[in-house]
Image (cartoon, rainbow, N blue to C red; front, side, top):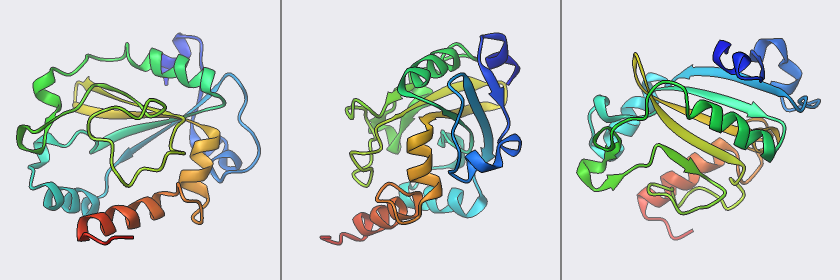
Length: 178
């Protein structure tokens, strides 16, 4: 938060704007809502089983979500975050038993980065995900517009909602043809 504020952003916490976090109201043009999370243990175990990988190679156990007003703010906030901490070495972003090389900067508007899930919709397009090497380990920073945040986290009926994404991913893993 302090880092973003020192670099010209109006960084705020989610509990200061519950209406926005619920998908209502609007976000100010200079505002960056910073939410931190630790992946819950069930999700960690499921991911370890899904890919047969140990905990030490997971890149998103600890993460931050930054919600911004616009695509222009997306670029600015992500650029600021790219200067935070260190860039992980390529070996620290090597997944799937050495078969998948993640980039530390993944722009979902481009749709061309390694590891893009087939379950991700074309409309998940206003986000940049970064991996940074923090003192406590590799962390993922997801920067997304308020419009995308609403679709993913506030509207469970949206094609882009996290719940629908998880269902699509599970169907792909089972080999369903739908």
